[in-house]
Amino acid sequence: MKRWDAIVIGGGILGCMTARNLRRWNISTLLIEKEADVCTGITRANSAIVYAGYDNKPGSRKADMTVRGNANMDRLCRELEVPFSRCGSLLVTYEEASVSRLEQKLQNGRQNGVPGLRLLSGAEAEAMEPMLAHGVAAALYAPTTGTVNPWQLGIAAYENAVHNGAEALLHTEVLGIRLEDDGFAVETGPDTFRCRMVFNCAGLFADRVQEMLFPPSVRLHRDGAEYLVLDDLVAKPSRVIFHQAGSCGKGITAIPCVEGNLLLSGVRKPLGIPFATTADGLRELRAAAKALLPEVDLTKTIRSFGAVRPNPYRETGESLHDFCIEHPAPGFYSLIGIKTPGLTCADELGQALAERAARYLGATENPAFDPGRKAITARDHEILCRCGKVTKSEILEAIRRGAASAEAVKRRVGSGMGRCQGSRCTFEIEKLLGEYGHGTG
Image (cartoon, rainbow, N blue to C red; front, side, top):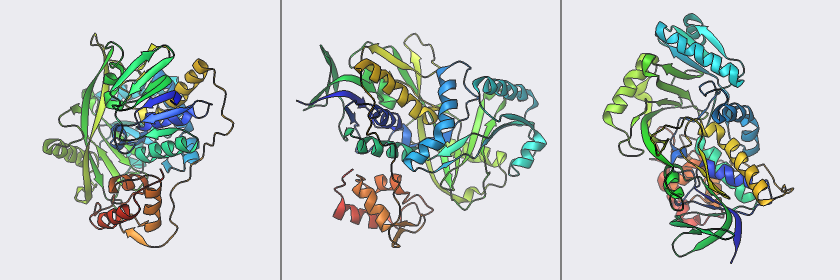
């Protein structure tokens, strides 16, 4: 029976980056994902922001990884051929009493090594972003903040991991884990897979996966937020806008996405139905967006969605504010409750885990590792998705790479993301899936 050096549980962006980085070494790797595609959980619904690093406590793992992850994002996105926009950000406040909070974040950022941070007057901020409502008291400008499509980045990492020899099992749920003399046995129902190391990257279920083998140590409490997506022709700020909402902390966020859309993110709140929106939440988000950006045309909203964030707590009730990497036994690592800035730090976390694996296994570097992945590009002029100008050849290539549904095609090439939300192209895409839907992924 085949054995692996490492099994990665969970195919979100953390699991895909971990699998990719494990293959930088001569470490045989199996990725197991319970859904039919990768990057369908937390990764599919978040703010898409690459953070600068001024929010994190100096000296923390988060602070170090955020600054490094931000600095390395250009290289990573070039390697994986994923669009990245280093658009910068403004953290704005309309309350004089909150200016001291911005000053503290400025000091945090400088201690963390965030380049280019500046505290702006209200007039300077309004001149930099004319769409802001008048009356800004101050703003913290971070030129290194950026945006990237989270699921495209995760899928690209997955494709590169497989290209470099990682194996993957999709639509396969881990049901149990056993400790054995020479490693671990990972059970998925009819099959058992043996390995020397386990990397638990199961996102919203990471605490439960660890508890298949070890006593509870960290539990996840979930919260959520509503999002609005506006048409790519709508007027939008050129930078990410964070609203510092006085004593209540961060308010809404306005994000100019790499695809050209404006994404509006609401305030975090207790979770209702995962990934669902509420009428009250969307109404509050629209009102707050109009107050922050009076000229924004909310009639150009093309989609709304809900996101879920896992918040880690010790069994004692202590909230964890740094990245939680549990190591309950030799060869077993759990990433539990990796939330903001998890997207920014996904590759850094993957590299850290791979380096620990190499030391534990005594593995050598893989000289054949290829960091490059080719993006899907058009090879014809037959457009099937008019809103996104996506061609038939792009859709067929997405299917060849393993997309097994119209939703999976969308995450790879952007079909169905425009103003008609797939009402024109979905039928044609499903016809192609029926004819060619046996991707080589």
